[in-house]
Amino acid sequence: MTELSTNQAFIDLEDQVAAHNYSPLPVVVEHAEGIHVTDVEGNTYIDALSGYSALNFGHRHPGLVQAAKDQLDRSTLTSRAFHNDQLGPFCEALARLVGKDMILPMNTGAEAVETALKIARKWAYQVKGVADGQAEIIVMDGNFHGRTTTIISFSDDPEAHDHYGPSTPGFVAVPYGDLAAIEAAITDNTAAVLVEPIQGEQGVMIPQEGFLPGLRQLCTDRNVLMIADEIQSGLGRTGTSLACEYEGVEADMYTLGKALGGGIVPVSAVAADADVMNVITPGTHGSTFGGNPLAAAVGKAVVDLLLTGEHQAHAKQLEGVFAEELGKLVGHGAEAVRVRGLWAGIDIDPELMTGKEACKALAKKGVLAKDTHGSTIRLAPPLTITEDELRQVTDTLASVLAEARG
Image (tube, rainbow, N blue to C red; front, side, top):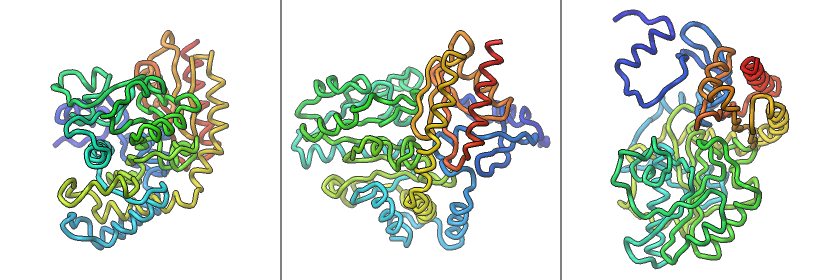
C-alpha cells in the first residue's frame, strides 16, 4: 500500500473505498486536543463545530479520557442480559441533571428519538386510551431528528426524505414555532409533540420568546406529551443544562446524545418520569450496546462535569461576546445572526458566497465550521473555549467576509 502523507492522498483513498454520504471540507484530522485539531500535513485549526456538539468538552478531555481508560481495564460490554456496575450510577446522575425519574440508555441520537416515539405511542395506547394503531405525533417543519426510515418519513428536507419511501405514517407536520397550528393539529389521537427547542440543522433557528412555555401549557391542557429533542441543544451548549431551561420549561421526555459520549463513545438516552417510562417493560425495547459499562462510565463522567454548573455558566458568560462580535457582521457580509450560549447560526449574503465557500475560506485561515441550507454556517465551539479564542473565531469570520466583499 502506498504511504499516505498529504490531505489529498487520504481524501482520494477515502473517495475510492468509502460511501459518498458526506461532502467534508478538505481537511484530514490526525491529532486533536482541546479546541484544536491538526491535519496530516501539520496544519492546526480551531474546531468551531465540536462534532455538532458531540465535543462540547473539547477533544480528548483528560477527565473523560481517563474515565474511558479506567473502564477499558475493567469491562466494556456485558449486554443487558446481565447487570453492570456502571449503568445505575450513570442513570442516577443523568436523571438528577435533567430532573427526571428514569433513563433509558441507547447509543445514537436517532435511536433515542426512535425510542421516544415508541414510548409516546405506547403511552397513548396504554395510558391515554387512544385506539391501537391510531396514535399521531405532531412534528415541526424544518426538523432534523436523525436518518432512520421512520424519522426521515416526517422530514421536509428532500435530500433526507426523497427516494426512501414508503413513509411511516402517524405524523402531522406544522410550522415551527406556530402554537396556533399545533393547537389546531391536536386531536384525541395525538400522543405527543416532538420539538427541537432550537433547530440546529436548520441553522440554529431559535423560536420566538414564549413559544416553549406556550407549548408546555398546551400539551398539559390537552393531555399530550411534550418531547424535547435536546441531542444538539442540550448538555450545556445554550448556557443551561437543557435548552428548555432557558425559558423555565420542563418537557415530559428528553432525548439526549452527542455530548453525552464525551466525543469518545456513542451514548444517547431518553429521560422521562416513571408514569411515562414505565410503559416500557422487559422485552418491549432494547439494545445490545445500550447502557454498556464503557458508555455508562464515560456518560457519568460527562454528567459529573455538568453537575458543577461550571460549563453552563461559561457558555452563558460568553454568549454576550459571541452575539456582540457576530452582530457586527450584519450588513457587512452577513444578513442575520442567531446566538444562544455558544451556538450560532450566521446567514451569509448569498450574493457574496455560499456557506460551503465560507467554510472553505475559514478552514484556510485555521477555523473549522459547517454550512447548512445554502448560505448559512453554524458555529458551535467547545464549551472550554476562552474569550480570546472565541474572538479569534469571530475575527477570522470577519476577515473572510471582508475579503469576499473586496
